[in-house]
Length: 85
Image 1 (cartoon, helix red, strand yellow):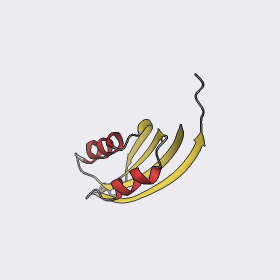
Image 2 (cartoon, rainbow, N blue to C red):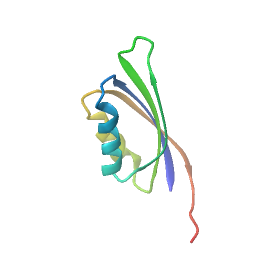
Image 3 (cartoon, one colour):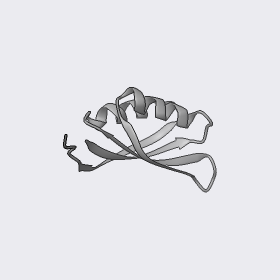
Image 4 (cartoon, rainbow, N blue to C red):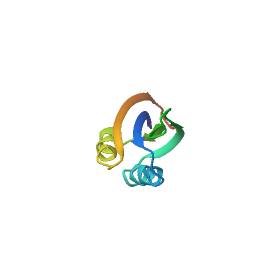
């Protein structure tokens, strides 16, 4: 599976995290790590999300960008891991 690291900046709303995670799940990605920090002014939050899937990450990033409160999404591909049976 390929891991991707996403850096997401959103407005600080109580429902934002729920919406983000719903989109991640519906697009077939699994959350591996997540870190969230509020900005100094308190209006925005920065979310660092590591997800894994065999699916192309642009399927996820394009949908996240469409969410109302999302300001920006940056994607970094980390590494490919092979699972042996």
